[in-house]
Image 1 (cartoon, rainbow, N blue to C red):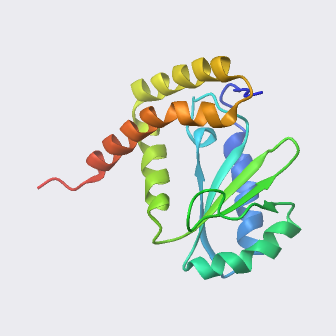
Image 2: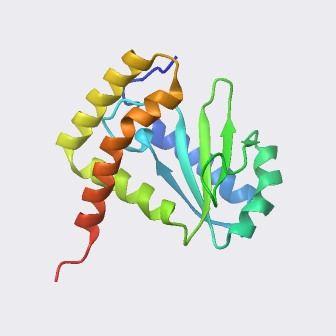
Length: 169
């Protein structure tokens, strides 16, 4: 089932603990770890899964992070549908997921712009929460259909976030 939980003020601390573990385990390889996804947006209901974006200098450095992350309990899922991604999940039920990318991968900027835009725009954040609740009720346990149905909204926010981030001339 797709279950949305009210925003939990403990999510940032859960992220910080996981970030510190990843940085220590992948010392010298992971250069930063960002909190992304709905648990990174204060006030937004979310599936209670801490979404993280570890960043490495080069894609090859991600391969060297597989074994250290597995020692932390993360299962490696390969690219999982996104070229250039190393995807990891932890917990049963899932409690954490990490989308590891090289610093120059366009998904890094996209995720950060999306997160920051929703943090700054309460009206869009509220619209997104209503959409997520409606889709969770509609699709129940079909995660793929749920994600696909969110795509038009997310694409619109991506466009708005990119436009807002462009320097004005």
